[in-house]
Image 1 (cartoon, rainbow, N blue to C red):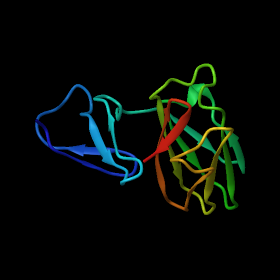
Image 2 (cartoon, rainbow, N blue to C red):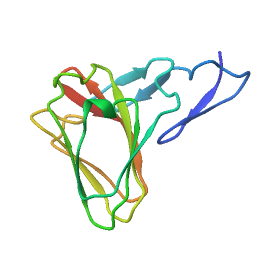
Image 3 (spheres, rainbow, N blue to C red):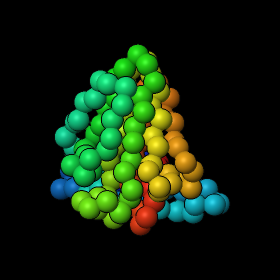
Length: 137
């Protein structure tokens, strides 16, 4: 078994070269429990660079890295989790690289059981659809 270290938006693993990234397990605390991302969930992605103050997540954003670069606050809308084309257990990575923070607000759904999730300047994480809601790591 290969050893690896998780970072906000990627992995570093030791040992021989692998064809795909290993699985990773997250402990989200007593109320949310453990979540396991399957092997290959952390492979290289296409970057979708956003510079505006608003953005709505699209089905084509899953498996991508979304970067948000703006001096002001950024409002990111997540459509209802069960929207056509939004794969169950599908994920995308969100990273704020500008001065403004990004506030992610699901429509009808929740993110980690909450109405919003804020990513501060120079922060990021992985957001995955989990049934009718979203989980953020």
